[in-house]
Length: 155
Ligand SMILES: CC(C)(COP(=O)(O)OP(=O)(O)OC[C@H]1O[C@@H](n2cnc3c(N)ncnc32)[C@H](O)[C@@H]1OP(=O)(O)O)[C@@H](O)C(=O)NCCC(=O)NCCS
Image (cartoon, rainbow, N blue to C red; front, side):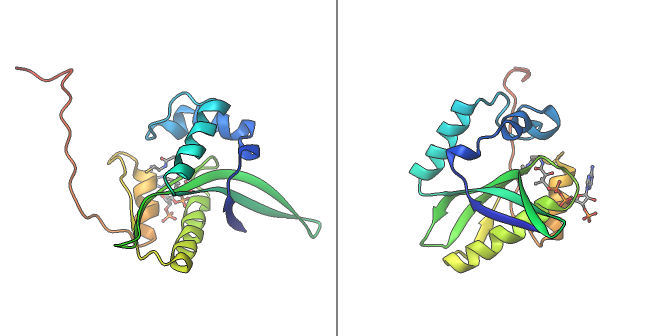
């Protein structure tokens, strides 16, 4: 079972820091070098901007006693209560096992209960796993973003 719960600074466990510094996981994230302090600042910035940040929890039944493990995080930022929209971001550190999809379903449940009606996200076009995950859940492509790399641009 997968659940989401509001994150606190006690949740900045080593697995979380290690995941953010793992090139396989951070390849398409802005974060490349995370520390406990930088994560603490990030959690505070989400809080200060009236967003929501969650830990993603996996429950495993050990001889009928549930044991819980944090396996990722999820954020809702840039919330516009007039439109009822928010930007969603998800990271799990057990990739490709369906946990990301289940976490997003939990966020969707949370959003519906909170009165939000639209979720937006941006994803790198090479992040095939994420795109597949989002499309499976019903996300649709809405806009084309472009960029120009001025380091390599020929005059
Ligand atoms: C994006 C992310 C949250 C998705 O969660 P996940 O648990 O890994 O994904 P899921 O297992 O739920 O779904 C992945 C889907 O992509 C498919 N997939 C996996 N690798 C793939 C690849 N290279 N190309 C295409 N599809 C791929 C899987 O088969 C699955 O689809 P299916 O259920 O139809 O078989 C997770 O991979 C992650 O945290 N990645 C690192 C951080 C990141 O990139 N976050 C997103 C930023 S926009």
